[in-house]
Image (cartoon, rainbow over all chains, first blue to last red; front, side):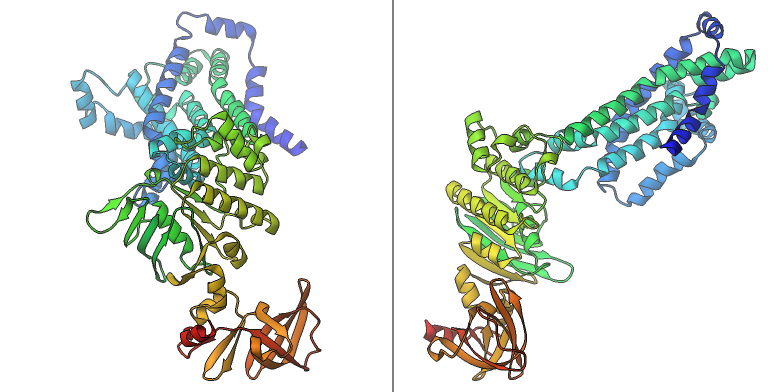
Length: 252
Length: 328
């Protein structure tokens, strides 16, 4: 118990330091400046779009990985791990080679009057690349925890595969999926390394903290860190509470 | 009618089985672990594709590897499978588990009546995690019954439950199968479970059906020495160019030549067994185990016993049909 408390306090150290070094006047002056809250809106919007992209595109991949539906599964998993292991800054640099204005994809986007550098699209791309591996691996584990025999039983009782997914797989994997999604959300909201390379604008909160730090110093930057915390926390917290309730309900 | 004629390749052997089960009939599939019993059920349920085969249920072709090729998916087969793990959905209440199947739309009265019959009437609001093993199995059985399956496959469903509960559940299933007039197959590796359930007993070993018949016929007249070994014969004593099978429970102390084969053996060991005793004898070179009502003589002493109406096997291991015919 005491050990757990010490570790918990140690983990909370930066947050405690943040609160200890914040003054009310600094918060007011930083956050009441014209356009001060624009980065917050950008971060939330891009984070939500990123979550949407992850849910739509990465959930089926995670399910297929968990259920061994893909040939050479280790190759697929290694691919996901590679994107996890690359430092975000390097991912950003490599994204320039992948979707930058002088690439094939960049050219195609230009034809559509879009760009994957310094745009909202670029910000979402950077956030997706920084958060997707966390979601895929977490969702894979969530799906893998669903006993295949339950899905088989649902099928034998007359449910088609899609219905089995909706009535059995998804509800049973949901707490794990929610946790993975909240981790991905935290990664997306805090994305910095890849973002600074391909999406300096529009500016989200992490970049706002960085530029404020450079331009006016730490006291002015800290309020934005508090904002990031306050805005990013509710979703993971809700996921925790909901997972715990689902577990309690199952235990009767 | 469930009519299955299938061949399925397994790593060590091929499961080759042809059997028919009439509506309301209860067939027990008995055999050692790894004989291919579960594989056969999974093929009938559509979970494992056979290399060759034809399966029909109530006139519907479920599987056919010959043209016109057909493989009805599991969710369209209307075949219920109950395994050792009841497979209740942990996120749904007992009521929601019972009514899970799309075809299960019971009225409240029907649901309560079935729940009462199965002894789970007061558990409808409970979550599966709160149920005991026996209760969970009853819910799983009720779920299958409400799904209105055309056939019931029971894969050692009550392994791990105590004997009296196993017998109660087996009787309940037997009653419900007869009432609903669906064919049912029970996989069992305990002979007593198979006998308690079945109208017919099928003995499967290494993928081959060795014998199908009435439970007492299979036990008293095993078609081969291998079947005899599987149904519990523990001694084989040479007798006039043949071998007599000795089932421990078909032995009585004393000499009664008109009731069977009289043996004189030397007691090598004995131990209490149930309400009586079990003794190991040596008859010539053959070891024989028998159950006796009273304590046998001490080791090294002779004991005369009569093996009641034993089956005789020829040198090829097959039941001596002439002997069996003359006896009958």
